Length: 216
Image (cartoon, rainbow, N blue to C red; front, side):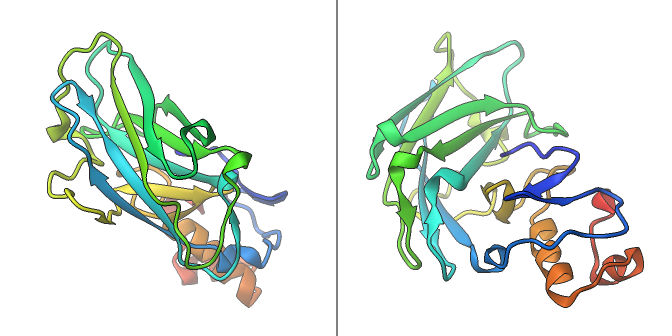
């Protein structure tokens, strides 16, 4: 889920924007966390090849079908794109990839690739990782890509390492990374958990915790 809607949802719980009360979220929210390690494969000048490994840094099993990774890039005017999976330890048949447009486009991010897993990929135990997920995408007409102005592209990422310009969500709640300016912030999900945990319900209490201005 790279593009947030007007309401944040988590397994049936609802948090309204500007609401005066919050519905409690499942305790598992605070226990579910992942890290995304990223590198860029050698794909030539006409393709981008973001490769990922997802690590469960939390304390509970995470169904991979609930995990979405968002790779943001600057699209060429009028271009359409195609996605492919070259290799995945969980199996390319269990990988998904779709393109979308951020809620707030920026000079380096007006399109994204949302990568995910099917239910057949199973769950990720605490401390475990997915292994290689080698994806790539290209213009449908195979014209060259300029990756230098892509938000999520890091030319120094030639080996796997934590990369926060790729975001990750679990069940629609962002748990990793920093989205492009004006889009879904990582602080939201953590502060939701804080508010619910400490029983703070009033708008004043939410402001005290530091709820982002855009979702008060």
